[in-house]
Amino acid sequence: MMDYTILKDKFLQLYSVCLMTKGVKRSVIVDTQREEWYHIPNSLHTILLNYNNQKLEKLFGDFKGEEEILMEYLDFLYENDLIFYAESADCFPLLGDYIESPSIIESAIIDFDSTSQNLQHLEEIFSDLELLGCKNCQFRFFHSPSKAEIIKIVTLLGNSRITSLDFIIKYDESYNVDFLIELTKQNLRIKSVFVHSTPFSRIEIINAEYFSYMGNVVFIMQEIKDETHCGQISPEYFTTNFRMFNESLKYNSCLYKKIGVDTNGNIKNCPTLASSFGNIKQNRLTEIVIKESFTDIWNINKNQLSVCKDCEYRNVCSDCRGFLDESQIHNAKPVLCGYDPYNNVWQE
Ligand code: SF4
Ligand code: SF4
Image (cartoon, rainbow, N blue to C red; front, side, top):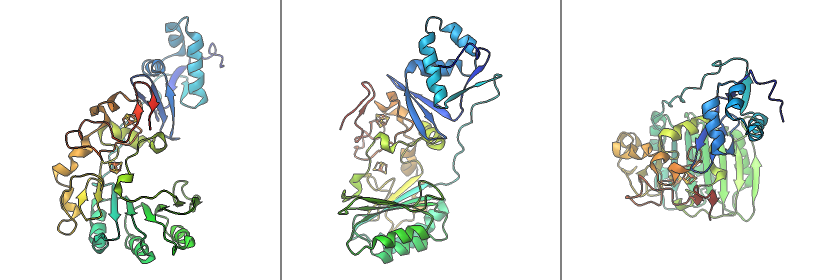
């Protein structure tokens, strides 16, 4: 335990990249720079809200008789680099809100199956995504695409502003694993290639020397038959960076600035949702994204949803609006979330 008597004149400072969310029974503190998160009691959340930027002397003075627990709290925060002690107050102002991206669309999911016509319309789709400023694109194949199809997509995006490209493809014996690895090596914008329905599991980390999260080729035995595989909420999918935390305070944490095209060419907020706003055979993505009916769902945040509004994870978990009927879409918790914030338990 630290000697707090020598620190009594110092000011408690929560690092400004550390953001908190209070739930009904406990809170979460997120180090958005290191992308790590911790549970904390609601009493500690209140202390950090009220005593940040205050002298330790004042804090200990207000909690006479509770010094033991207070020191435990402070030790925990200090050891995890969530707080520090400053010589003077007000030297470390809070960070402002994150800056909104200028892109009209940030991410796209394009689905294909063996009968899909989407490949014929790829050039139009890509040209529109470029105009809209899209940077992240996921291609999901529920069958095994030919090598030529994969190469066509990567080549067409060769001069685009896409910085993160994900593929989900079905395993085929004719695939040469080396082909996927070489493709990923040669194309630094490939973030991941997930090969599903494989007879083995394997992970190849290709471009880790550039960014640790880029360039992974992952073989999974699970079959991905269609778009309904998406939407699971669990801690392994939490996103804990500064932009996403702040974005989720206002907007939908999955669908904000997202567009999807399903296997039939229907243009949607994401391929899983029921509502379609047009079809790539008749419409351009650029004309769909300006419709208010399309962007309405972007403004649904967790503070508006029953259960989620009381949950300590509401600024780090995703928000799936799939699998809900029209009457639930603006107010119900995601169907595939088994978390109960009133008892702090996850159910299957
Ligand atoms: S209840 Fe589930 S979906 Fe809702 S905020 Fe909590 S973890 Fe996220
Ligand atoms: S809304 Fe649900 S189904 Fe759609 S992309 Fe998000 S998580 Fe997946």
